[in-house]
Image (cartoon, rainbow, N blue to C red; front, side, top):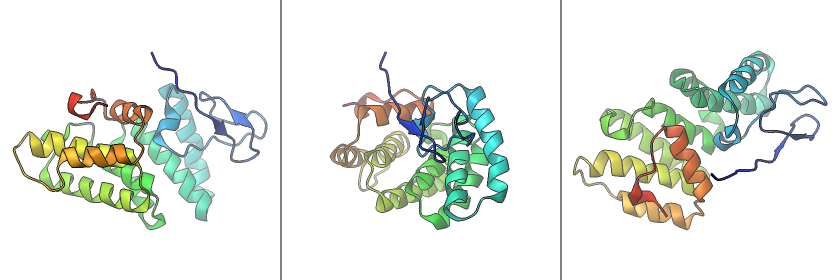
Length: 199
């Protein structure tokens, strides 16, 4: 079993935080996470508490603070498998051009299903959102999700698409995809990492 260490800091005072904390013990600020991986190891009950606290903060926050709170809420709802709420929060962030919001919304559009059974219109939206995320920020995990979508939806249906899943996977590796990022993605998706996408 691999151990993943996460270095979380309070956005209010900069104090170190444990992954299980929902609030800073020094200043009382709610913990704001910046990526889906920040929820690794947190019980769903802690994520639910964090979401409840942040909903109150979101009502009064403005600008960058509001964007960060809504991104954290979207990640929390996605982790809780509340895909509709996650999608609402991610979509509210589209004007902020946050790559992780496009990435998270692509995952939320799958609604916990394998791509193979998703409607074609959803797949087109997912691909568009992932391509936008990658244009904003070159993260290998975005290309890995594209590779998975194209492997499970297009290749299983014998549909040609360019670039293909294998090219997307090669680009994911070229953009510093880590085993931890891959494991986190497939854990969020709730599926086993396909052997074709192993490295």
